[in-house]
Image (cartoon, rainbow, N blue to C red):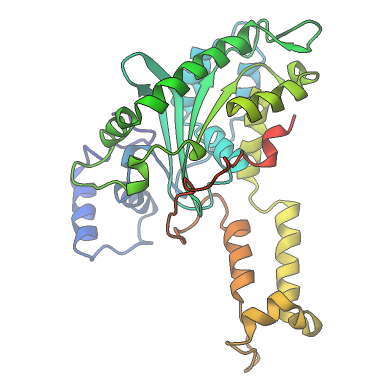
Length: 338
């Protein structure tokens, strides 16, 4: 199986094999070798060669990517090849984190050209873990150029419609053959690894689809149609500049918004009158604020976990399936951004 890393966990070097044995025996010490820490974190994940780790390098390729997607002769295949050769996985992880309310747990995976049975191949399968369990996003890339829209930009053109039709075929197949998807996932894991029970159950409320085509200028007059497509067909329609937007968010985890929230959390924990706010007082009551120490309350800790763990953080919640829910949760409101 292809690895998204520079190494192959299933074919380790002698040094990597030794580190894996130390990890199994509980003798591996983190912090001495960052590259080995990266390898070990991937090796101990569900799908080692597809794990997007907190150690995964992020390269500044925005300029090159923009030049690629704005070129008049760029194809879908050229974009797939470029992302793979540059290991620019942050564009895909950014999509997971921004549009699908996941990514703050260090349990995220990217599968390029994922097989859907024998008849279909998704350009990417993205899997992210959140407090609601694992989320699956099947992604179809289309060309960034060509007839993206028609009728003065108010209706979907041939390029977008081609992607939508492809995804609808996937949806019907996946709904009837989820066991085939699981069997394909198992090929990307160690043979002795038991996957979480949630992965074996078809849960339509945690499976999403995305079509990426065109550029920002192509989407100026189709906002309502995008929302209709998402609400009625569970398909998020994005343009390639959206990928640049979300990748830039990853490069700057301490955005103005996060810094503002961090400052407010600091006030809640240190300024006297804010300690009397209900959600602060509730968390502090059993722990006290004595000895001049600042106690991080559970509500504040929760906010910290979800806002400030950066790109990815430690696994902190037990996975729980929302399949019992009567309504299908839609991607976050960011999915409607232009």
